[in-house]
Each structure stands twice: as C-alpha cells, then as structure tokens.
Amino acid sequence: MADEFEAATFVEDKKKRKRRGPRLTGISKQRRLANARERKRVQALNVEIEVLKSLLPLSPHDKKPTKTEVIWLAAEYIDELTQMLHKAQQSQDEFEGAEPLLDFDTLLGIDIEKLFELEDFVPIVF
Image (cartoon, rainbow, N blue to C red; front, side, top):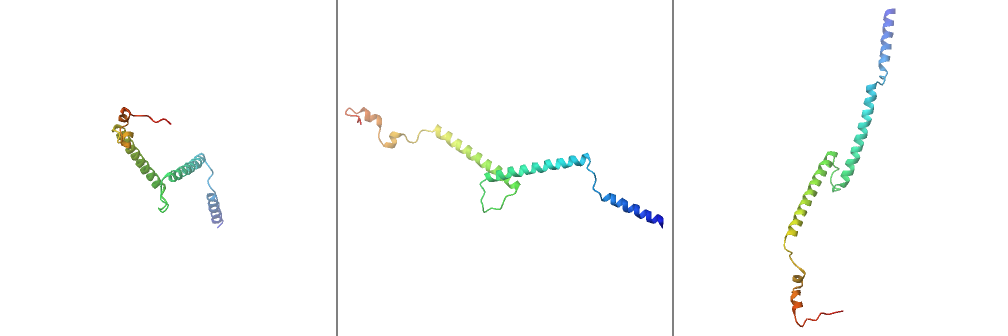
C-alpha cells in the first residue's frame, strides 16, 4: 500500500511539472522576433493598401473592397489611365502632322495680304 501511495505521489509530481510552461529557448526567442517582424510587415502593408484605396475612384455605394480587390482595381485603373495617355498622345501626334483646319484669315473671312496690296489702303493709326 505504501508503494502505491508513493507511486501516486510521483505521478502527481510529474503532472505538475508538465503543466509549467516551457522555458524560452533560442529557437522560441527567434520565433517570437520573427512573429513581431511579420506583424510589423503586415501592418505596414495594410497602411499602404489603405493609401492605395484612397487614390482609387470608388463609388461610396459599393461594398468595401477587400485587400486583394483593391490591388486588382488599382492595376485596372493604372491600365485605363495608360490607355487614355496613349490615345491622347496619338491624337496629339495626328493633330500636329495635319494641316491647320482654320487660320486667322479664314476665320475672319478675308484675305489680309490682299488688303495690303490695295493702292488706296490707308492704315488707321490710333
């Protein structure tokens, strides 16, 4: 009976020892530091995604986009702006290469050079 009592006490002592938290080892300290770095990285990423979201033309009636949707919407918006820029550049190049549609003389409906060729032309001086 005494042996059983000592065995039960020994088992209880073992159980109590197992309940204590493990001591921090080099690996767990490294893990804790890595977790802290990851938390900082994710927080910085969240801030930048919020900035990106604020730059997008979003309707206030739409549902709040997820982080992934914000990135996709930003990529689509950049693509649209790029296409608009290329179209504007092409239009400007075409416009510069074309004959002028109207010059000042045509706009007035008179030929200024012929006015100066008139013999009785007297310039008006103010």
